[in-house]
Length: 362
Length: 193
Image 1 (spheres, rainbow over the protein chains, first blue to last red):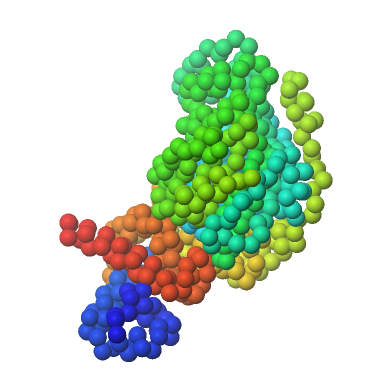
Image 2: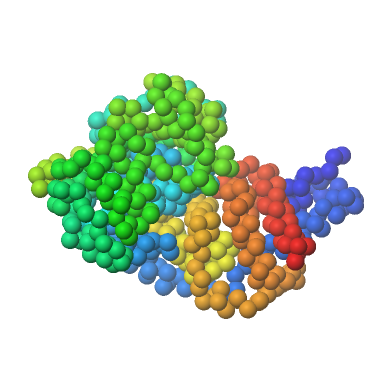
């Protein structure tokens, strides 16, 4: 008989009962397989030892539960090591909107296919990780509080609805219908809707000057009329159809949402945005977020990290679209914006499969 | 400012939305079984994250993030173990990849060339090797890295398969490839030292 696979040899180390008798007998009498088994054992032991930590004792579950309860009570998100200092100071104002924006963003981008009621950046499988990893950081409202007043209106409200008609009624959007499901995706989708969110930012020359001074620089002269000028950033509503795989992981998501847009009551939004981008001390993360907002909703609000995802241009129904493929090719997504409405098709599928679904939408 | 006021008035505070399905906690609500699952699986989640990060404190932060998310999701309690393990592995791998590992007390203590001994195999691994393995882990294909960490955290082949959507037969192959890649990484450095 042929030699058992490497995978079977590996399992023989951990769960010999899971290996067929014939394979076990073969290994016992086969010098080549015994060698392979020995190597597998050495590698497993070495890697296992390398992955241990130095900590002694067990974690304190009671203390951890208290911590979780306290966090939930304040409805805040655990502090992340990379959070900029300013975010820490503005926890009450900014963290909540960030979570709120993320809730909508899950529907908006669709690429983070975690069920839409999972707001936090912890996801079900690696299939959603490459893109969802970034949404937490990127598709939140920019923290502009150092430069004026930021007021968030609208509550995060992402939930499951029973049918497409309800989703359409709640969002005012036509839900796209998938003509043919890719192979391996079966069953009925779960429908999620997210309501609209918006934030209004009112520029304050005084606050901006203070922020500039903290950064050790002078405030560039603001354009006339900017002081007190307001900009509104809107996101949503949106709806997503989520097909789950047998493991419970999202296999395919088709989402549609009103594309994020910015409006201004005074100066044109681009002028406000471009001025803000010149400000000393503006954190790069905030600048990146700001750049993704356009006045007409034509900009794709989905900056992606090049080390996780490759992007390319394509077309869906004659409209320019962006194709995103995770570097491990586990997840693909195609996103486009037409007449202020953003549509995304994403899943643990090949790029050709998501494109076929996208191009076949009715 | 007119625009602001209009906007506030225009945003409906409570929309007429049908009640969510029974399995999905309403917005703001937390699943009733959260504490039971937390107490049952917290050590596992910390263990998974700690294998990725090499740090208990960092792992406990990850576990908080994971359970907050779990509290809002509708995964059945019977599938929670797999879900939580994968979420912990991914959150920790994301942290590892983006360089968010904390330089905490454990690492400071360990920094002086401390070694770790695996009781069973009597394998001695230096601090430097552990760092190299974690760097390599961050660059493995996500599925391999996760399968490896879950397996070394004590999940069975069937559990790893279910959690990652793999066939049970391919778990061994996936784990083996990951171990082989990490070992090569360690050997490569040894030979170049």
